[in-house]
Amino acid sequence: MELHGDLQSFPLSQLIQTLDNTQRSGKLDIKGHLGEFAIFFQNGRVIHAQSPYSSGLSAFYDAFLERDGTFNFLSNVIMPPRRINATTASLLIEANRLVNAPGSPGMNLEPLELIVSIPEELSECPVELEPDEFMLLQTAGEPKTLDRVLRELEFGCFRVWAALSGLTAKKMITLSKTEG
Image (cartoon, rainbow, N blue to C red; front, side, top):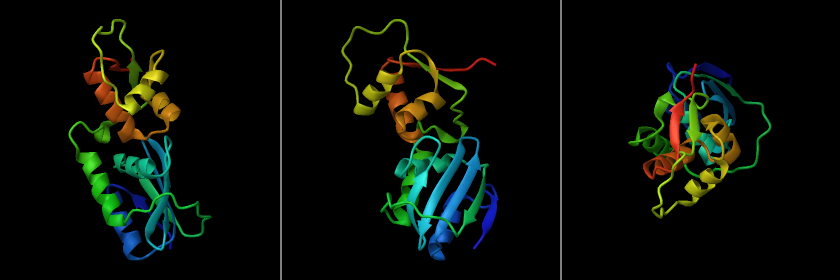
């Protein structure tokens, strides 16, 4: 079964439900402003996903940040090992929660336009860090684009965004737009 189109006409959640209901096996390629994503299906169940920044569940959820991209479903592909075991319904519920959560990166995330940097003056007060915040701080020596941070950490957009939000609230990093 070949299937192709654009995500504005056929939203990703509807597309995934269709592939689940028809018990299709193959690879769903998605191309959009964040890059290229691949979601693998076996008998309609999502078994693996890849994104420019991560693989597995993180990559699956990050694909929902694309709303204006295009897609192509291919049936004859070599399948990767299963890394996702959740039901389609639970995956779609969590994707919807992440995309619509307050403080979510939302659809306007542009990793090449956002700069992550450590302020020149940090507070002297002790700060409690989450593990992801600590790992992000370890990579944040010089200012760098969010795209670079995502590629270095391989966490996926939502997980990095949560760490960035926490560090910004704690005044440990600053976010700014690139000039140009």
